[in-house]
Structure formats: structure tokens, C-alpha cells
Image (cartoon, rainbow, N blue to C red):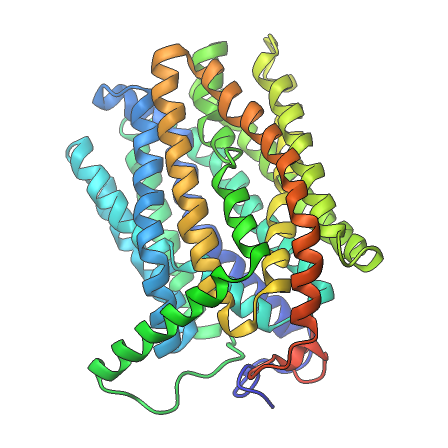
Length: 446
């Protein structure tokens, strides 16, 4: 049994597999739940504090920039201590900062506390994805990644309209953050008690100085190895120029400002978006796995391009439409969610296929918590300030339509490097290769 599988607490059977996937999904969803409160209830906060659209961009940017800096330190902690303990802290117990943010007396205090909270949530994604990668074989990773992100979307979609109902209450936005923080605390406790981690903690405790030196050396060598993988470098560039995420961040505000819907009415689009996202991740994950089996050297890149170009087209329809019924926007947001749901089930398995298991958490910390967060922050700020200058409709056209379309076309650069790098990794013997690649020691997540 390898280092990845030794000490696994997960016995065979669907129950433990479903339990672990559910807990990993919940841990990843906490950051989205907090973002959902911000997206849905920002109009109330804006009115209460006299803010503009750029303030929403500032909030999103602060959260992503702070998360960008905090992601790798959480990964290092997860290598020194038990991963599920670190995951319980960063995705669960760290919710206390969201509760404190709900009590902020002004916007500056809120931004500071919101940023501290984001620093914790940044660790959840890379650690959860690393555990997920240890629990399943390569040919199933699109499917299980789709199930994880689909669950995240479903949680966000169900919670958003509920948060929207708080718009009828005085200080309703505060109650939303209080509820979000409380959910985090509950999830942290459940992870600590019930999550099975297939990889044990370090066996021999080291002194603090030696541990810091070893981790720094490990990170430096790991970053050098990641930088030497051309596919990984191109994925970072591709994610750096992706502005898709801001569509949902500004979607409710866009409907309120451009079409005159109330906050409670506009917030209902979050549920169809999330249900579409769920369908996109679940169906897209299975289609992605099928495409990978049929065309192992190019299928995932094909799926990536289809999702991006399709999203750009649907976003154009949504932004330019002059509909007066929320029902029409419900349908188009469901389509947007479906196409957005294709991205993680392609992107994450792409990285898993070219990066050694020992470096996957670091790779996800760099790609998801750092590069994607940086891009999200920059485009949120850009959209907010452009929204104030030229109107939110024009800002969304530039960021979510034009940029996404160009990015989709440029993703063709991945074909040759991915074929070469994935083949090289498949034939590379290395220490700690998970036994799940053979499907023998740890049962695959369905």
C-alpha cells in the first residue's frame, strides 16, 4: 500500500464514498455560500451604506486577492498536519470571521473582516481536490469532479433565493452573513468527525525551524517542476484570461439596475443558474470522461473550447435581451449555468492528468486559489469600475462575452502540449502513485 493509501479510513461500499464526497462538496461550498450572500444581498448593503457598483467589485476582488495569498500556506499546513483537520479549520471553523463581518459598523470594517474570512476559505478547494484525486481513478475524475462542483452549485442555488427573501427585513444582509457563518461552523464539525482521509499525517514530527525549511524547499522544487509542464503553464494563462465568473457575481445587480426587478425577484435566477450548473457538471463530467476515453489526447481540450464559446454566445443573448419577464431570464441563466458547469469538470482533470499526485495540491493552490482568484479579482474590479463609467451592461459585454470568446479560441494551443504531457506522466514511475490508479485499494467514487 502506498503513502497515498496507507491509513485510509474509508471501507469499501457506496456509503463511505458518498459520505466523503458529500463532506468534500460541503467544504468547497462554504466559500460559494458566502459569495452567494454578497451577490444576492449587495443591493441592500449598497442602499444601507450608500455604495456604488464598484463596491461589489471591491468586495469580490478583496476576497480573491486575499485568497490568492493564503491558498499555498494552507496546503503546506495540510502536509504537516492531518488534511481533514486543516480542511475543517479553513472551510468550517473559519466561518467565525463571517459572523463578525455581519456585525461590522461600516464598509471598511466589513471589508477587513470579509477579507480575513476569505483567507481561510481559500484553502478548502485545493485540499478537497487533492483528497478527491486520491479517492478515484483517472478515467472517473471528470465524473466525480462534476458531482462535487454540481453539489456546490446546488447548495449555492438553493441558498441564494432564501437569502433573497431576507431583502424584506431591516438589516437583512446581516442576517444572511450570520446564517452563512453558522453553516460554516457546522460543516467544520462534520468534517472533523466523519471525513475519511486516505493519506495519513506525517509520521515523524519535526522542529518548527526544520519543518519550515523543508516546506520552503519542497515548495520551491514543486513550483519549478510545475513551471516545467507546458500544459500547466498554458492552463494558467487560459484561466488568467477568463472572465466568466463575474456574470453570476453581477447578475442580480444587473437585473435590478438594467431591468428594474426587485432584489427578491432578481435573486430567483440564482437557483436556475445553479441547477443548470449542476446539470452541466454531472452531465458534463460524464461526457468529458466519455470524450477522454474516445480521444484521450484531445477530448478534454475539445470540451473546454465548446464550453467557453457556448458561454460567450449565451452571455451575449442574456446581456442584450430586452425581456421584461423574469421567466425569460430564468431560462437563459439556466443555460449559462450549464455551460459554466463544464469548466471545472474539464479544467481539474486536465491538471490531474499532467501533474504528479504529490504536487496536485500545490498545483491547485497555484491554479485555483492563486491564478483564478487573481483573475476573478481583477475582472470583478474592472467590471465594477466599468459599470460606473459606461454602464454595467457594456462592462459585462466586454468581460464575459468578448474576453471569453477570445479565450475559447486561444485554448486550441493546449492540444499538442496536453497530448505530450499526459502521455509522459502516464508512463512516468514515481513515488507515492495512488493505488487508486489501479482501482485495488480504495474503492472508486461512483
